[in-house]
Image (cartoon, rainbow, N blue to C red):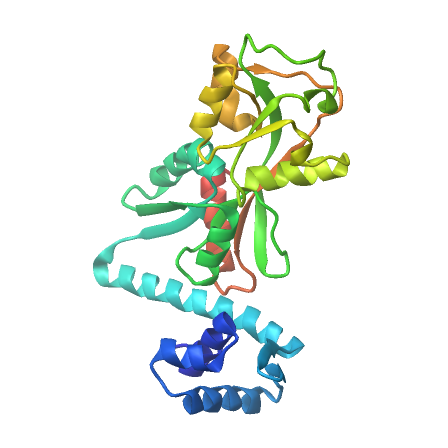
Length: 293
């Protein structure tokens, strides 16, 4: 069982405030201070530094936070395993970003259920930041993401390398002749909402071309991929999406690819879990099943 004083440490880290941590844990502020002092004495380091009333983590504190977050997630996973041993049956709770959840995971889950047909599965779909928070809090066991992440915090395996496609409706009329990315700046750009992995990857790519989203003359933010594709199909703008998300529409001619000389963007879909987890072998086995190896 995880030392209850580690829970106190994690609560302080969430708020960087001893009073708020005490309120969340329903204990006194002196008790919080005592728990932190115990941990500092036990490990022989200072976990927090103080600048007036402002609280921050020391370098040792940052390392302890990473390890404690993994330990907390592992403890929650252990509880799940114990529940399975008592007859509750196998279960799986994981996260996926929208594109991966909608267009990649159905076939992967079919492979899983062929191996473990009685598994109860819950897939949580959210943006990359939401999934990181849930993974760190132990609400999900692992996540498949398309956004960037801190490799020092997570172990990972590349699930797929997926290219982007620039698409529009079959009868779309461009403002000018198009051969390069900059030729599209006069068009309405249909783009995912802030926080979306798809948007973040595309924005990073634009930066490498010395461009910004704001360089497009008109931007329409849409949080639903299906709605984006319908808008593009009806000639209401252009979109940059993973090929996995538009493959069917391209095959049916509902959308067409915009051929560009200078647009070549491929990004990894990544299977991640907390770094240093004692269940690393379990996650690798799950990856092999979902991936089809």
